[in-house]
Image 1 (tube, helix red, strand yellow):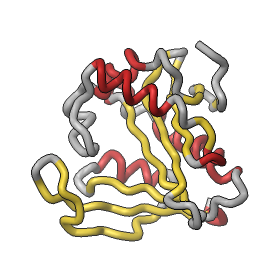
Image 2 (cartoon, rainbow, N blue to C red):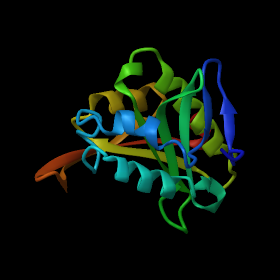
Image 3 (cartoon, rainbow, N blue to C red):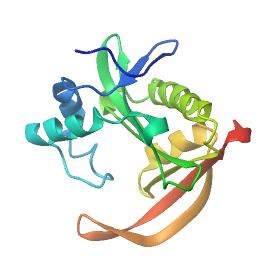
Amino acid sequence: MTTPAWTKQTARLSLRTVAVGDEKEMLEYYSDPEVCRYLLHGPWTADDARKNVEIRSGRTNLDDGDLNAVVLLDGRIIGNLSAHFVNETNHTVELGWTFSPRFHGYGYATEAATAFIETVFELPRVHRAIAQMDARNDSSARLAERLGMRREGHFLQDWWNKDAWSDTFLYALLRDER
C-alpha cells in the first residue's frame, strides 16, 4: 500500500485515507443488509467494493473538495468517514460515517468522528459542518448529538429511497461551537 495522503491518531484508533486494498475489510460490513438499511444503496458485492474503494481512494484532500477515511482499530478497518463541500461557494462541509456493527457500543465512532471533525475545521474556509441521515437511523442521530451537533431540521418524506418515502434529519455544528 502507498503512503496515505492523510492520517490521524486518537487514543485507540488510527484514521487514514481510503486506499486500494481496503475493499475486503470494507466489504465485511457494507455487505450487511442491516448496515445498508438506511444508506442510499443496498449491500455491496465484491464488485461494488472495488468500484467504491477506487473512487474513494481518489478523494484524499478536503481542500480539493473531498476527504474519505477509514478507521482502524489494531490495524483492522472498523468503519469509515467522509467529508465534502456542499458546493463551491459555500463554507459548509457535509459529513458521513459508517461503522461495522461488531464495534458498536465501545465509543469508537464518537472518538473517530470527533478527530475527523477537528481535521475538517482545521481548514480555515470551513464555517459549518452538517450531517444528513434517514430519520429512522437512531444510531446515526445519537452519534451526531454526541458530537455536539444540533438537529436543525426534520424533513418529512423528502427522499425516495428503496421504494419508499423517508424522512431526513439534518444536524449541524458551527466552527465556534466546538
